[in-house]
Amino acid sequence: MAIVYYTMALALMQPLASGNQQLQQTLAVYSSNRSAAFAKLQHWEFALADGEAAKRASPNWFKAHLRVGAAYLGRNHAEHAYKTFLFAADLQGGYQEAMQEAARTLWQIPQLQSPLATKRICRFSQDAQRPAGSARIFAISDVHIDHGESVLKWAEGISSKEFKNDILLVAGDLGDTFNAVKRGLMLFKKKFRRVFYVPGNHDMWIRPNTTDS
Image (cartoon, rainbow, N blue to C red; front, side):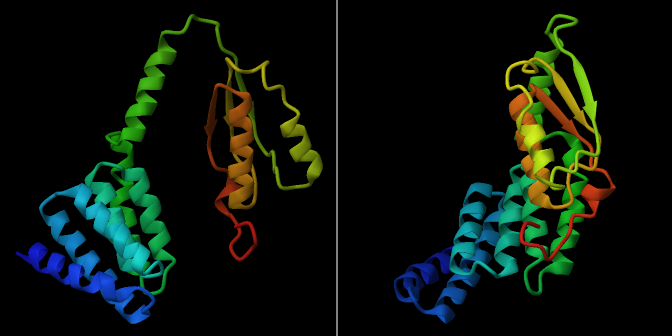
């Protein structure tokens, strides 16, 4: 019954809310509440759609992001849910509730039930069929890819063909900022067939309050 009432309210509110910030927030609340109602029924697709609608209506309202995260989790997308909850934790008023949800979600990732985990397992199974000796394993650490142009130039200069059957283990200290770590991993992924990454102390100390954090 709650879903029916929220649906009626949304139908009346949507034509009036355009350009009106107060009504946009009300629209976000109604969409968020209907998302919660769908989640109670485990109708995750509808719950996700309403969570996304709440986000569009009020992008900085943490509750909307929590609804999206809950819907992702209901669909077994634990990795996406975890990232969504962490984002919500940085929004005003959202830290405590979002971090509780993130901690609960984190324990579900190692269960390997998400579509992303299933894809990884499938790739590992494919790798198990490869002939012995068909791949080499390389390891590197302390790249610090954000420590000057020379480091980045070296990484970009790695052959894009020679290592296409090989594996690279990145054993920490890839960069000091999020964008540096992301850029380094993306570069290595272009060069090697598989890249495995373990954060080091510099990666764990990713700096806040910088333009590329």
